[in-house]
Image 1 (cartoon, rainbow, N blue to C red):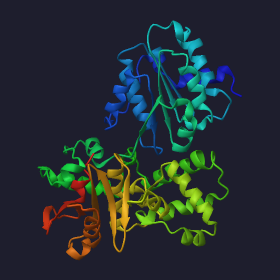
Image 2: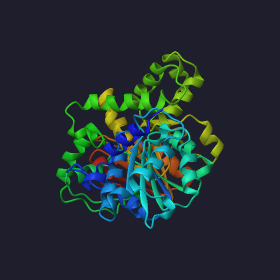
Image 3: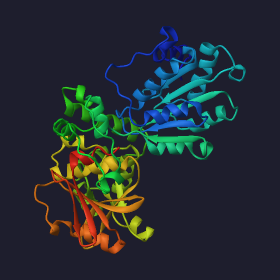
Image 4: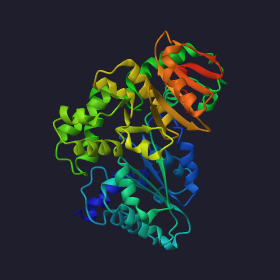
Length: 436
């Protein structure tokens, strides 16, 4: 059990602005796409939750929010606490907040004439954090809560029924290509999928510069800090190991860590492929049920994402094997990956930011189905020569569902082509990934 003196020392260490009046931020930070939404929520009573894979920028966004708040209120009105390296202890959330009231604010919350801001980082480590936060919220104190977590299972489980209607969850992803370009101070248009589908975009004047940047982004992925690291492969391994041992093995019933690791590395090399449970069970020498359970653990810790079959029958869509994508194409530095699968992974993760995606399969397959306004099939053909025969799955899907438009993500081709009553937009991958 932590002594009060230990916790107070840690609180003062994590909140240097109580003494200096300001927070130090790195010079090269950008405002992420999600940041403007989070700023608007500063005035709302809802609990704002930032969830996502480690090192995607959740803590950095919290620090940027703190910087914004410090321009409008006294430093002692902002409290940040990270539970990432803390040992589990009963009622630890309430304990640190009460110490904050008693030693920093030196007032009881109900007598405050202004709002205070509490940031709880990596709170998924605390089993009953939701109940502890709820007990504070129930008293209608003037508190705005921000929380973060690297496990969707433990955040949603912790929130449970107690915080229904009180919590707004924001998924934080690695850099999109557009965010990467802002980080590199390269101008680029913000596109949306409807514009791309309808071929309503203008070719960027600085296209050659964007293409050069695309090669870097494709090679190293979207983790914000990776471009500052000399040992990029080691950095990615650190992310994987931290996720395995702090967010999965330390918190979930994992008996065979080598199977979990082998499963993830399989998905790196086979990202965008259908899961074959029996083959995985044989190759990793473990039970079918263990494979299914460990896939769920990898997904709830944001290392992978599952794409279900698109079907008129919801039962069929759930019953069929999913396709699995790693959460960032940069993981390909850890494992040999086919270039086409890497591009498909980047395309999937680009579109996944704003909606649930599907795949489709009958006699042929469609890589991605986007259900935005109207369903639209998207095929990734990252090659020089694309023939009509390469698009059988696209046309088959369009016939079955009465769809008149499709999209093909290509290497260089940019044109709209009509096939009978169907129109297909061909767009280079570097341009497609500007969708935000």
